[in-house]
Amino acid sequence: MRYNHFRPHMSLDGKTPDEVYNDFKLLLG
Image (cartoon, rainbow, N blue to C red; front, side, top):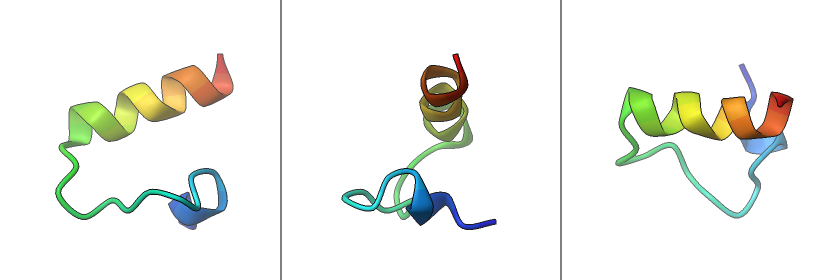
């Protein structure tokens, strides 16, 4: 999936699955 599409200024490198999940929770409401 193209996570970068949502957060072009950030990289998934170094992010934990929890942080990625929280990002999507905020994006999708």
